[in-house]
Length: 198
Image (cartoon, rainbow, N blue to C red):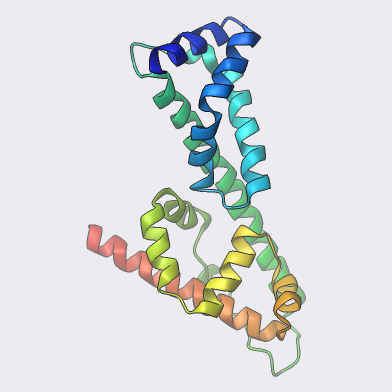
């Protein structure tokens, strides 16, 4: 399949739509699998995959068969675009959490107060976790079930803290506390692993 894909990608660079269609048929399953390793929501992953193929269509002329096989090149495009997507999402989620925290800072006194959003991992720290799936799985497994659930709902499903509280039928203050402890634990684990790597 490698030689055929090389030829199809080179033909795509000339604007050959039939070649591009065949290239999609041959490679979309593998590229989609690569996207799903980073992006859990299927509908979101499908959208990212379409954006990846748009990049391949527009950038096929940059492919050099002397430098890499076509699949290697396309997987690099896929990985880079997935990382860009995650960066945008992580930045947006951090901003939303900051706004949500501000709106709810005068909640009932029984609610657990959040420390500043700076306690949470930065978007680039989340990207590092996504790039190393095994490390990410280990980190998530180290959390309690509730902590893991609220992070999955927030970062995979795109829920706000208020959404999570409603879905779990839990006080907003409790959700904030679970989120804060989970993020702090992940941050500590990341820092510990970074220290071991040095």
